Image (cartoon, rainbow, N blue to C red; front, side, top):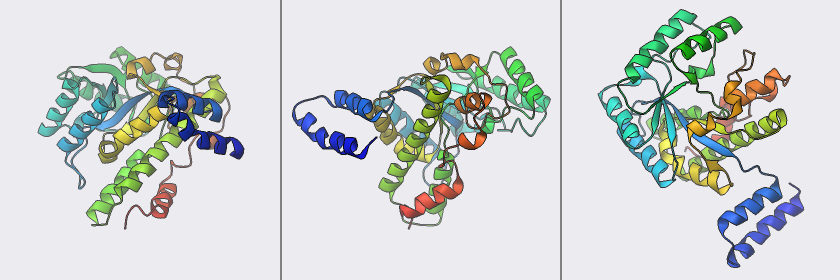
Length: 320
């Protein structure tokens, strides 16, 4: 957006609000003026139920995430369960999500990489998780590959898709990738080290990084598909989600986007297209773009780098 237009839009904001314009209408005008696409996105969380940490207990984390989803009026969220994580408290936490009206998906039992084990070994692990998840209500027939690794070669990719379909699963792909897990690891490390943590700055950084990723992959989708698909955001069931999900939800809505259910997102036509490539690590949109000739070097946002995030955290003086 040109600088003059930026100044004009920002300068006019208080005027419009003082004149009684609803904030939601102003946001739509702002999106139109800046070229921001008002899209649809669903929230998904990997690795549930993640164990307690130095920052908070698993029970407190689950309670905080549910509170954020309820207060943010998120219609549904999908928690992809790594069943080897389930202990007594973990069972209680998964039931909390179910009782709150959210759904569970299969994220394997032992979080194996399909790129590093045989098809048979991977499917044995996936089936173990499948049987365990039968004990819970509100499961959805989606399988998300750990690490977004789909298989060692194209034959393995096709075989795994076929075997999972026989179990009744559709692919629980993502469209917007990020390194939220590394931000969380940095927080836990700082907490263990007894550092002072500026949670306000960390929350701003977290939201900014996630939003940049959403915009990055949406832009790729528009260039590749000619439209913005119904997105699926990859998050993890971790401490930064529990702490900053309210701020993230507010920001997504403030930017004019709609938070939809995962079932609505997976009804998008791209759900039926599994690109014939081995590059799936950055999600469905990136894989589709790669299948159309876009190099992998252009399909990973700058913030999907530990070095980048370390520099960002240091420059923001989040940990002291």
